[in-house]
Length: 404
View 1 (cartoon, rainbow, N blue to C red):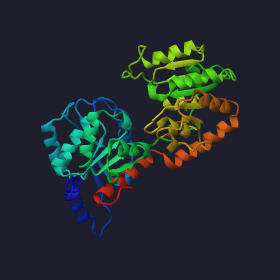
View 2: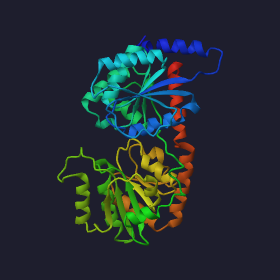
View 3: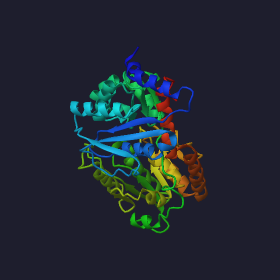
View 4: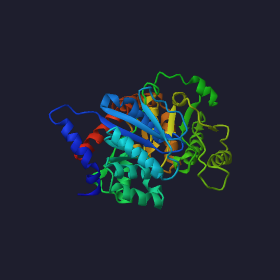
């Protein structure tokens, strides 16, 4: 018997007995989030929580006392605060063990940060409750410490779930995790919030697009792998043939970047100046009106490399806007090239420029790609689907079945 089987044994036997000859019982899941703030992985957990009840998930959320941010959860979701801190806390683990046993929790769900993985793993072993680890990041960029921790966690976990096949395959190939514990569940998008009916005219004016401009928008953090430099160079090239093309870059400035300028955003602005396009390439701080940003665009372009998921792609599609992205990372999982978006070779300003010129010259193509994209997202990437797909993962673990 391996460690993961030992951990899950008591829960599996109890579940098999309770479900014998009857309909499946609800799955009680403890969502343990030990981060200091509610970051992007939390938004995916929130999707599971919002639609969990309809899929037989009974959630209990545990946050650290130090966790900041807006929960955006309904009144029916129980949230507890525990003194987790940023490091392992034996007292907290014992407190949580009692909670897991008293509440008859079936599974523990954590994200891929070191604090959450370590706390979740200790709690899983202590309470003999299966662990699900949800990965949102690029395996190639993980630190040696995180790789060692993941290899240990993998021997104990019921499932390691990537946000895309790209992430799942990277975990197997680069970290050496066995395929039997690996799967993926795509993120989702609220197709009511991101919709073709959203009015983007006020945002378009705010972003400074001139009347008659072909508005190209990249909503993404200012970071080396997001492809902003390639896009700026592409716009400079494209404007030689179509001077109506303008670009707005909207996002937060990643302070982890170390380069020749004060920040990566500063390098983008210096590049635009050197190419003589500063009047047509503008940078903005993040704006909470993400749906209006997409609605303001004629073209949404994020030519990032090694994208772990590509949320902007499905947001653009949901809004009915054509999306241009690099044939890299998980983006090809979101885009059918030439059908509901356009994919170009990564790190190629020339290829991006060609795609922008093609779309700028053909409003009917922009409309067709946007319409097909809306259909694709509605069928495959609605936020309502995330909970049902995780429910299938949870039930497979409890039934000792192969992961979906």
